[in-house]
Amino acid sequence: MTDDFIVWPALAGGILIGISAFMLYLLNGRIAGISGITGSVLGSSGHEFRWRVLFVGGMVLGGLLVTWITGKPPQLQFDSSLLFTVVAGLLVGFGTRLGSGCTSGHGVCGLARLSKRSLVSMLIFMGVAIITVYLKRHVFAELGVN
Amino acid sequence: MANWRNESIAAVCGLLFGIGLNFSEMVNPARVLGFLDITGAWDPTLAFVMGGALLVTIPGFALARKRLKPLFAMDYSEPANKLVDKRLVAGAVLFGCGWGLVGLCPGPAIVNIGTLNTQALVFVAAMLAGMFIYGISAGKGH
Image (tube, rainbow over all chains, first blue to last red; front, side, top):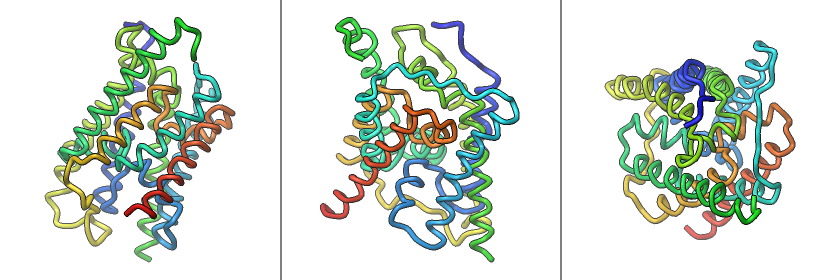
């Protein structure tokens, strides 16, 4: 285990994410699933288009707001090649749409809705991601693939 | 009028979501990969983020569901499909591969658009392409 982890900012950030998901559900009756909201921007129109674009735009603005207030941009450390980045992006985009959700829709909201589908989905994508990281960092890294 | 209210709420919720993801450092792929790397230098940060969110959503959603309908909408949107099927499993497997490969899921990827980081933008473009490809294939196949 690393000593370089954060507790309070992580909890506070998580609570804000939870409040966001709770508000969208209680007030608008919608699930704060980012893959669903983003993926449905294309193909929707009128109000259905506008609320999704505003949510996504709000997310980008929220990130910028933290940077502006704290005065330090977030650290972004990548350890993948550009080719892997493209492959991963395609997999995440296609996979989350096929599987009807990601960490937010199935994780933050689905678990709270006590959905069996969400629990199964989350166990699978987390398990597969753990195996992927293990193979990449501890097996293939030895062979010089990253 | 009603639409305007729902759209404003969506914008505020998006804003809070983005603040939460940035402040908790989930926008940094290294934080996420550190959590997934259970045999390496494990980083529990993501567990605190997910825990904090569930701390609100578990009681929150239970409370909301006691109401017949949301405060400002006709009904709660419920997924029509209740079954664990091949699509759900296959989608989760593909998503897990991509997530483990780079350490970005859709939320952090979207928030990272604001950083104009080249690699993050490449990821977002590929992710949107993947969603688009799904849209086309689903339109044909079902």
